[in-house]
Length: 443
Image (tube, rainbow, N blue to C red; front, side, top):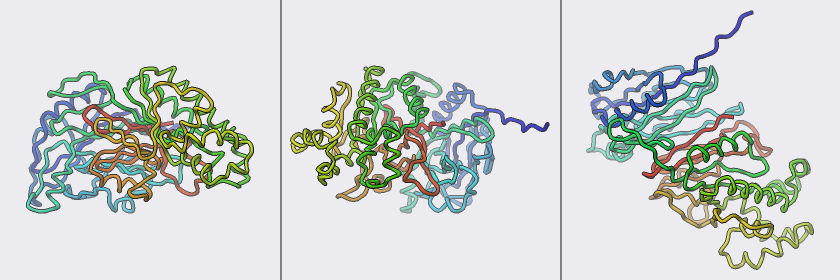
C-alpha cells in the first residue's frame, strides 16, 4: 500500500533586506537569539531594491549570520514565499496583488512594511497575504515625496512560520523597535541578544458572540490568559443578540435555529453572557476585563428604541425596567440589561460607543463599526487617524499601518454568510512599547 510521506514540522524566520542598506546589528543579534530560543530551522531573507536602480550591494552580515536569500519558496501545500518585485518605496505593498497571486496558496511577501490581508476562500479557512518588514535600515531617495513617505513608514520586522504538516501552518508577524529590540509574547529581546520577561499590558479577543462561540478557539484564548497573564483583556461583541437581530426578524428557519441553540429570548441570551463573565472573573481575578459596545450590543438598544418590545410580552417588563436608566445615558445598554439579572464582577468595565481608552497609546475602546461623523467604520478610515487602534467587527484579521483588526472566536461559518469567506480565529496583543501583534488560532 502506498503511503504519502508526512511533511516534517519546520520553523522559519523570514525577513527582507534592502540593497545598499546596512543591517540593524542589534536587530540581527536579537533575531538570532530568538531563533535559538524557538528552535528555528532556517532563516531566510528577500532582497528588495534600494534608492538607486544600480545598487546591488547586500550587507555581508546577512551571509555571515547564515541567512539565506530567496525569491520563491514553497513551504507546504498552502503556503508560499513569493517575490512579486514590488518596489520597497511602495506605501501600499499589497495593493493589486490579490488578483496576481495563485489562489491555491497563502503568500509571504517581501516588504519594508508589516501588513496583513485575508483573502476570501471557498474552503473553511481564508488565504492570507503576509508581509515581512525589514531587517535593514531604510534606504530611500529622500528628495521625492514617495521616498519621504517610504522613509516615514519603514518598519523593521520578520515573520515566524510554523509548518505543522503538509497543509497546516501558523505565523506571527513581529514588528521591531527602531533600536532593534522587540517583544514577542511575554519575552523582550534587547541589547544584542539579551532576553527578559515582560508582563503583557493587554490581550484583545476576537469577537465572542456568546451562544455561537467556537469552543476550541475559546479554550485557546483562555490558555493565552493563563500563560501570558495580561493586565487587561478586551472583548468585542460579547453579546450576540440573536433573539433581537433586526436583520433576521421574521425569518422562520433562523428563529427555529435560535430555539435549538437556546437563543430565542433576550433573558436566555443575557443569562449565558452573565454566566460566562462570572466564570472568567472567578478564574482570572487579577485581570481587568474591558467590554466594548459593538454593533450586536446596539441590537438591544435598537430593539427598545423601535418599540418592538411593545408587541412581545415575554420581554416587555424586562425592557421597561431598563428604560429609566438608559435615559441617563451613562452606562452601556448591555451592562444595564445584565445588572437586571445579577451582579457584574468588579473586574469588568463596560464602554459605551463613543468612549476612548488608550492602552500604551493604542485605542481599544472602539469596536470598529462606527466611522467618522456617523459613517460606517472601516480599517482604512481608522488608519488615517493620528493614533493607533486595535478593534474588531469584521471577523477578518488585518494589519495596516496604525490599525490592527482582530478576528472572531465564534464559528467561522454563520447563517447569514453566502459564498467565499475570509473570517478567521484571531486575537490581538498589545506590548509595553505600544507595538501590536496578532495571534492566529488554528482549530
